[in-house]
Image (cartoon, rainbow, N blue to C red; front, side, top):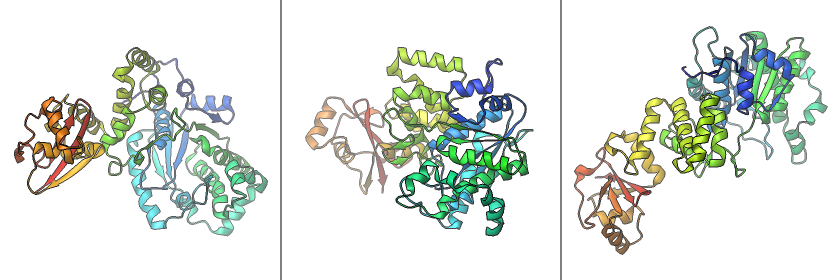
Length: 428
């Protein structure tokens, strides 16, 4: 880990978090400031395995955990093997329950995905924990006596998501989720000395229930805060692209597509995204904001954001490949320098046509790739000098390709003009 939270030693951790907009709600603000700006504090943040991968919406929690660790605090990253089998109540309807063996597999995958964000070495090395370890062995009678006894039903009913579901119906299973999460805080406090929990603002009711439960059990004091839910400027959900969620797992969202998600950030959003996700100092970010305002067409903020977050999640090599692909596909770099995986991922994002058997003419390839609609349009585009194959201008639409031009023996990059490209995947 080589990023630093405090470039200026006079800037406290809480100052930095507040400037970045990362504290929305908190328990007693004064005691929270004292705890965070003081010595080594053990904290936890939870991730429920509701899919095979985390998505970019989880990054706020992951990078905030990194910030706290860089400031000297110890992270406990909880992946909920127990709570993932229940599911936090949704506003709309009851969650579908996944088989325990599926949840177990997702827990393992998510634990791996969390590893790049923190370090597991040193006095404040992170630990991965699973709430199934203490929830699984507990009997129903023990849970009702030791946990349920401390939760007034009227308070549980007052929670917004529960109140909104009362008319349409909510099962006891989802209703009891709050007890499970609250018990997690208590168990981590007892087992690890955990004194702080944070999470997304939609978890505030569950988090404060945990703080109250620790107090009712005669332990504590403990602290809590929430980070804001990230929405786009147009009000849509952050982390959603045309194809659905943007995943952390490279098999579900390629590093190139991940990079492109950040490159395509709206100008209205990018400065706030940099504050949330970048580890650049306040001074660096303010300089970047100024440079971006002066030259918005250069998209300096988007490029800085995309490079840093992709490198954090997928590593510097994959980030460099994503940058190289972005440049090469538009004629500003060498296509031959791209790995087969990066090239295919990039072409798949643009549209990848398949060709089998004999290689067709260049004009036919332009049509089959969707870059032109007809043979006449292909001829016109070529005659005007606007058609390219592997970044080389096409001059003869009737020429048949030599297989030697296939990239990695399989791929072709076609481009019309400066910005419209498509891919072809060839199979003999």
